[in-house]
Figure 1 (tube, one colour):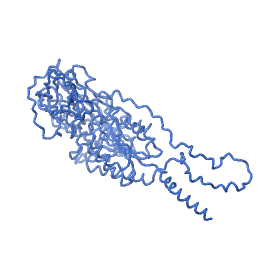
Figure 2: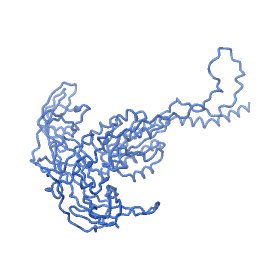
Figure 3: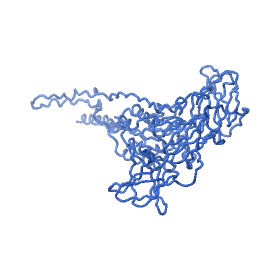
Figure 4: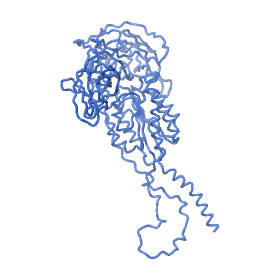
Length: 635
């Protein structure tokens, strides 16, 4: 009897830790992937002298800290897109998992974020596919979720919702979130298929967004997700202790069963891991979206000067401009029949003063108000049709009055006709068919103010109860103009702009900067083939002109008579310098002149060093002024 008791105690202590471990391992380990926007627009100022990328990093770290308080075993990973290649390269495969999944990696995350630099385009759909196929690889043992921190939408023609539907949805165990650093209503619709959309456009919004996400995760962590029971865990060896006395008991005779005796169960033969699914082929990026390199899509004569100097690469930042332009003017501008060379620049000596700070950016263009033709706010022509409905609502249609309707989504204000006070503020959003989404409004008499500038206002309109009030507004387009800021009378004949709607692929229009052109109101991504390339983002309103002022360029002339080979040029980007161009120093000063925008630069080159030496680049700093040539000799 004593012997049996001792054996029972021995078995208990031998198997108890295994049973406990099995219970603990019966639940999936939570993992959260941070998908971070590293595109060029993230260098723009966000708030309190912070860039958007810095704000995004703060959001990530604040979120990790909050989640660790709920469950310190959560594993985080970081995937970034748009941070390895510059905008002109339009690399739609630019995505990389910078930190693999692990728990307690707050310090690792903060150090990696501090060393990343935004610089490229936004292949969001491709990044989601890579995450589904390469990051979310074991959904039996792990419960995955995703948080996207961004300031814009897809720029490579990818279909985010299709990737979510076919790949990502099957791998996500709990709700994904999108944190947007800009307030732009169409983005919410674009990401509706992915997860819950939150905005953080000022510092106090960070705590709100983090609070919403943490509360959502609190509910998930309160009820752990159980692993699939389809895979049997092996029975530990101690269970094979002989209880051979039981077969001696005579069982009543009966028909033999097909069940194997317990001792013959070979649990260990059951595979321990599920076979990995065959990865689907990676999508090719949209061919239309790769037209960012303006120089390859235009007649040769427009870019003869750049090609002459061996134009190969530009990496530079995008600036999101929010301005209040004035009413449009439409003077007649004609292109010269033949492009003439600019006046010979003034020669200066290459002895630039030592800069006080390397953080100073080269002069960048501004978007200014065009001179208004008159100061009168335009009263838009309107018509209203009624359709009986259970609720009172307002739908706004925009047309040119000639049968064309616009899909523009400007901000709008509903004003009280007597007091002028704001009753409701909203974005005019549209559905997939281009029909405006209804806005719930109280019955009454109002004036509609259209766009950020409020340039267009309707006359008095009456909203009738228990009806869909469909208001059609006749509008005119906005106008885009380019000029030199210090010399507005000189035509900007050196440059061409690529203009496209920010959230619409295949919409590129190439506008010589000597022209002014009309565009329907929308948010536009504009690239000017200066060196470094200038990239702007503007909201174009109905009936208004936007003038983008460009600093007049200067020149740098490398006077070397010795051939150095390739030299790279660098310009300030954030708190560091970034490479944007290669040139060849062949020893002929007559072919070593490059047109650059005014600002501070660095030239980097390497001596012919033996392989393995770590001396790095030789660097010389120089500055360029408008309408002047800076001579530089690299020694």
